[in-house]
Amino acid sequence: MADDKKKSEEMKATLDDLNTRVSAAREASKIKEPRGLNEATAYGIATRLVAELVAGILVGVLFGWYLDRLFGTKPWLMIILIMLGAAAGITNVMRAAKQLSPKDVDNKDEEK
Image (cartoon, rainbow, N blue to C red; front, side, top):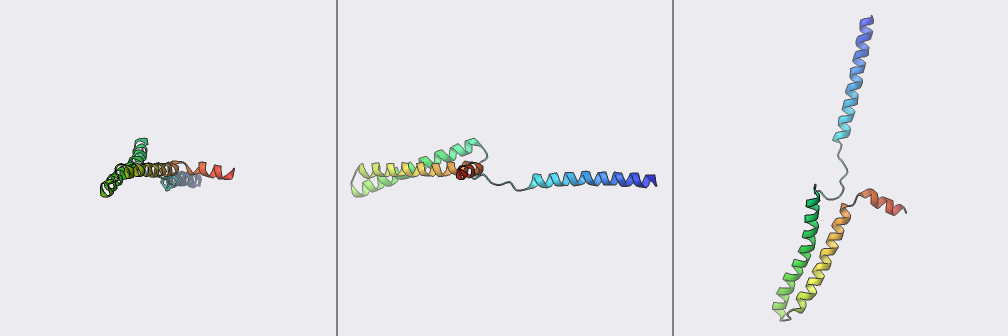
């Protein structure tokens, strides 16, 4: 009888340990809430931000150059479109940087 009680207690301890390990494994495998962007490293994030800015300026230069050649307005359209491209690039960088910020910070600002 004592052996049965001892085996029962050992079985219960084993099941409790198994339950604890299964719970820990489930917690570890839960899908984590995304922070915004999927870049894993600071280098990837910095590269994306620089690319956003350079792309806006480059598009402004190319369109400005093409339209200046088309309409014969050298260099005025290029200057205007470079400024517009820089503004668009800065806007894109600000938007991407806002996506990088943790969501908890945004919620704290809204509560104040």
